[in-house]
Image 1: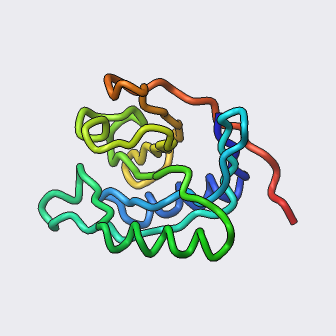
Image 2 (image 1 turned 60 degrees about the vertical axis):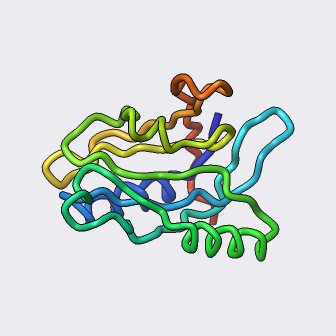
Length: 145
């Protein structure tokens, strides 16, 4: 289970809409609860580092950007709890490429962008044996003011 605010979900959707028809990507900064639940505190957008010709159906976070995100999270006494990216004109369901490049424990929020508009956001967790993804419940909470 992963908890995000309505504003955080909106940030992810807007990032996907801005980058359309290419994939957007970023990190989910937050904390892990003892029960395995993840609480997202901030969205950390990252520029998709894929080569231009592949950006429409792949996203890449470089090791340098991941380290930058981890340093940012540590500075706030938080962790990276996952990744988000968009699927332009495709469902918010992980691809084989997503599975091949995933890490256990993290959440993977995918937003489907159809013709430039966000239509669906879903979260996924990888099985410990790396064989498949299982859909993860997203708990949406009101914006925290």
